[in-house]
Length: 120
Ligand code: SF4
Image (cartoon, rainbow, N blue to C red):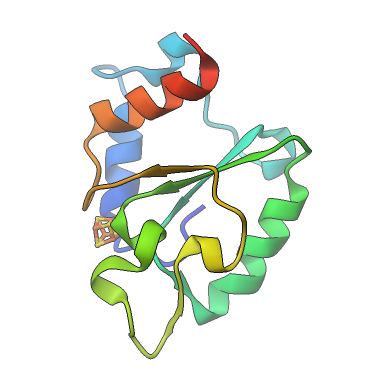
């Protein structure tokens, strides 16, 4: 879920699931609905208008659920900390289980983190 990112992190997540890094080889798969997900990848600082949608999306993921904060903005609001439209980091809205630092994190770092979740 993009909670307010610049889209840089999404590009790297897309690469992580592309033909070069191919995260699906390790049992991770992107799904279209939180109701089909085991884990929620969240990017960006949480903007004021996205705090409630983030919480609702989190609640739509079946338990046990894992939240992964992807990128510096998701971890601590990064470049956008203190901005008037910024609510705060992801952990201010939902519990975060895994953090992938970087601005943006490189695809191999994303794949390595996902492998830690899938165990493959
Ligand atoms: S961490 Fe960097 S690339 Fe990712 S949303 Fe923030 S500014 Fe953009």
